[in-house]
View (cartoon, rainbow, N blue to C red):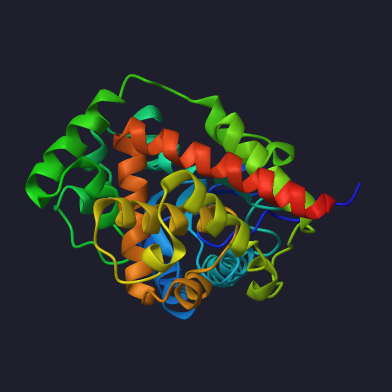
Length: 328
């Protein structure tokens, strides 16, 4: 059977895992780890994306990536090809270094972002390599604690989930990670390729619904094909549920209800595949403002039950409007 194309969603959170061929070792010395990270940094400059966590183990790699304009497939193909060529040349070997197709699971960000960061950083502890995650050199955990410079990892969006002030957020994050040390392996973070979505039933249904109307997008296709979401239906849903007109939340309004509408518009638009650029054009917000609204919405969704209920009502209203239009 042909392999299913990947679910490529702008703003999507992806847990990426790649393993050595036949689970063989892919890092032999410090220079190998450093080379992989340098290649990742290079692609992050060329094909911008957010990197929230990484952990390089001897025979496999975990990455937590938020996709932006370019496909996760394109990013990983460049990183893995470059690293394989380097490794084979340096260690005088030939053949495939990594195991077939890497795994990239689309995850519900507001539900799993901090959980996945913790789980990835605890890999060396679960493997019995170290007793404490900060003792392991080749993960991004030390950057979160301020023990290393956060060069390629984007720690701020995650730390904001733990507090507004940096030191307090780091302390709360450390406690959160420590609380997970005894959790052990979590099978749900390794869903099969046929179950390429990790999230609540509603999130999975919404994603499947979206891609049921739009053909699944394989790595390498143009971003514009992902931007064809029904903005009008979502605007109408937000007007109906929030009681805020489009002139208000697509304008300079600063009331609490208007700001909530702006944030939920950005959040749900990103969930269904709209790019920050497109949202900037629709709403009149700057690109950076769209990003700030998105971060703020995710934080509130994680901490506030009222926001979660409001977002759920908007999603249902939006899907109903889409369905009505498709049947008209």
